[in-house]
Image 1 (cartoon, one colour):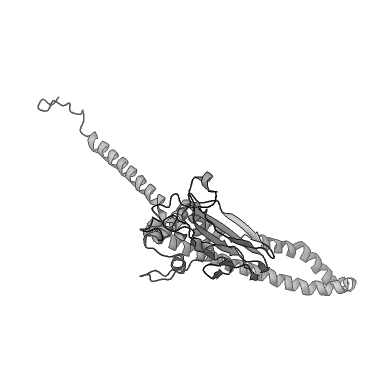
Image 2 (image 1 turned 120 degrees about the vertical axis):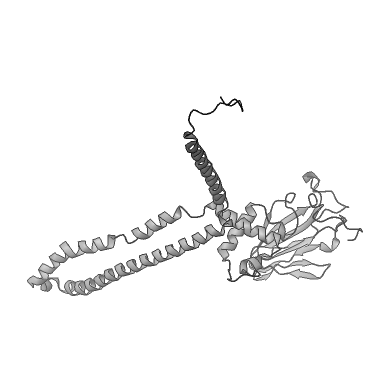
Length: 335
């Protein structure tokens, strides 16, 4: 007992450094694994890790090229053998009895089938890919995961949102201050689009929420198929057909053309004198209501008859509820 402090002193002070060191090592390991866990969770945000991936991919390319060279050498030997056997069998099959009349030919036939063809079999069965597969297997344990790929795609989408970049700019890699150009393939763009769809991140198209929108409607028009002039919104002089939805009137329409049409099939707005000709992958968007909530009667439209071909379209109708802060009312009734 230390009488000055009132504390019990340890029996031996020799053990203290060892205990302290163990505690320090344990704490260091815990901290290291915590950092490692954070790094693995955001693989794509670490330049150091991404740089390692570049060198790993370069190593794999070299390994792949070595494998290709071995396969090409192997195939060259097999092709040479095939050419040799083709010439020989063409000669022997033309006159089998005459060919075998020579004892050397008879001997060589037996030798080829007993020795040479099994040797060729061994050559064909040689596994030239073993080295490449082994290298790939080692490297794969350090590869990014599906979660990392999704995270990297979300990072691109976040950059697009933050800096107001359109999809064309992103896909062409036209970013300021970049030394190397990076162009996205159709498959890359499709992957980004699929993720955005799964995440519900496609409000950029219209600036409106789809939470209160109707389900996507798909329509097909055959030869002569048409749709009479009509309004997409519910007018004051008719029954409120959308009352049961509880989402208000149709504030906007998004019409997507899913196919090309050889002739005819235009979407026309008679009061505006406008016509939109269907082209696969294009779309047209318009507001059915003024900012005041009153119907915009200029939006009366129709689908002209299909003259030649087949027309596929899909409609997405947006409703008023949920758009209050995305498309607020104007200062006058006609805004």
